[in-house]
Amino acid sequence: MKNHFSGIHYLFEGLRLIRQPGLRRYVAVPLLISVVFFTGAIFALVHWLELLIDMLLGYLPAWLDWLRYLLWPLFALVAVLVVFYSFSLLTNLIAAPFNGMLAEAVEQHLTGQPIDTGGWKALVKDIVPSLFSELRKLVYFLLRAAPLGILFLIPGVNLAAPFIWAVFSAWMLAIEYIDYPMANHLLHFAEQKKRLRQRRLLAYGFGGGSLLLTLIPVVNFLAMPVSVAGATALWVGEFRNETA
Image 1 (cartoon, rainbow, N blue to C red):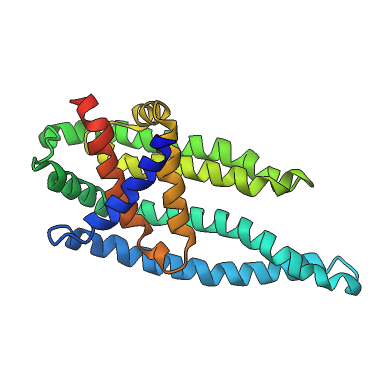
Image 2: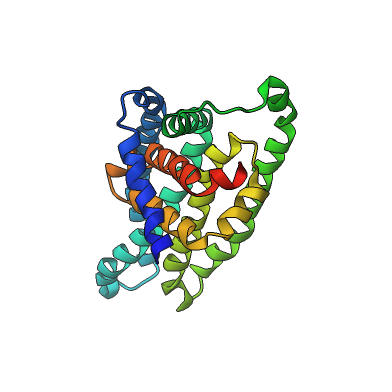
């Protein structure tokens, strides 16, 4: 349980870090992207929920219209988990270059040392492995997200589906955000996953905290930069010395 709570602790550290004078400028673009996408997600979520519930109730007799009040909380929970997590992936994809810069700046702030990437030759040489790593990450996500999506359609089982999806989302968010500091050190998906598996409670604690930030209105605008900074602090505190 100590690892679990220490994972959450790094998110609070991320919140502290993004407010540091030397790091604020790296937060501006990821924050703007988060505001735009999550604002769109909130409006889309309300609209889709209304359409979905109206469609489902259209198949029921009028006297069962009271089911609307039972369906709203259930579908809201499912939709929030799925839609906000999907939007998190999209915002991270678009903000990736800026998040990488933020991770680099945070690590330098914490360690007092610049990151040695091996120069431009190492970066050019790493382009193909990086693309292959991202493809593997996408396949990894799709192979697990598809069967989890089917669980939502199975009566009875669908009651547990939101909780299973939440655990899966926590794991994927841990992988998503630890990628930025680890990729700065040319560590790709297979190695990232291997290291997180060695600290599962730490990963679930961090990813679960990041997911919680994503689900809270207004606070979710800060979820991405806080998680990037927190993941970098996690890298420095838990993994960096092992790599060295």
